[in-house]
Image (cartoon, rainbow, N blue to C red):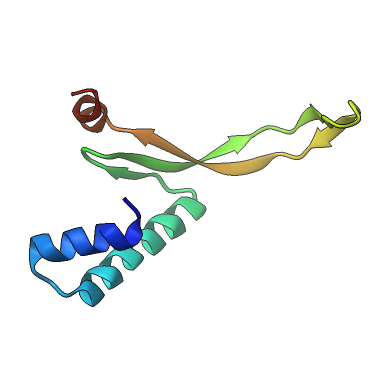
Length: 91
């Protein structure tokens, strides 16, 4: 399911226009992104947790030349799936 299909499904379920649901989905995604960028943890009961995770600087290897290269420290997004969601997928 992609974003357009999600919007169609939610619009049919809650009896709102696709435009209204699209605005809601976009707002949800934007606010979640902004919160994670600020370093906040976004926990959605039954779905999971979105957060930022720091990665330390390290030495990597260029696969083409085998040369060791420094990889800078950085923050990366992390998503942890909730237990309810895991259980539903397992069946």
